[in-house]
Length: 239
Image (cartoon, rainbow, N blue to C red; front, side, top):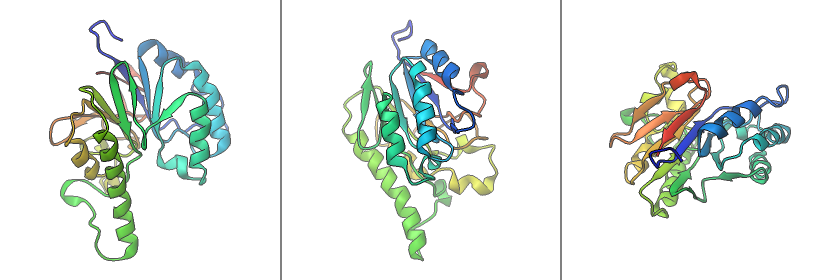
């Protein structure tokens, strides 16, 4: 906990741990543990969603000495082993959000992977072919899962962890043609109905660090490659 009594949350996404680069995160996790009270992993923890990649990350997480919460990203689903990947990391001490919430030092964490679909007036509508309806349905289902989790919380310090972006501002810098695939405003619509202090996400590797929901809730793009204060690859947010 910082000197002003606030909890310091470190957020990072898109680690993309791969088999050809073992031990790549050990120094990073050790540094984060010295600077924060909680680590939030914002998806794409592995590169191809393989069990070996998850095992490598689990080994590196031994160097993280603070509580860790996480959501999966699209890369973690690539090999169809996302449940096994999550279980390996759960055994390494990671608390996965989604169907459950987690509290550390009075800060409540809720989160889901999220999904694509576009932002504001350019959101894709569930109209036409079944494939389109299924696509939009996935975005709606993720927003509903987040709403269900947020409804269970009774805290004045709530942090939401996502992989996909809830607003367009934090994907600025990516090609505009990719915007519909980087997130969905349906997530922001849900978030704005609750007393949320901050939102952390990843996925947009070339996006912008900070923005806010229509109601003014701060949103931070924690993708590893996005420039952050002090030149760090991770964000430090006081809650």
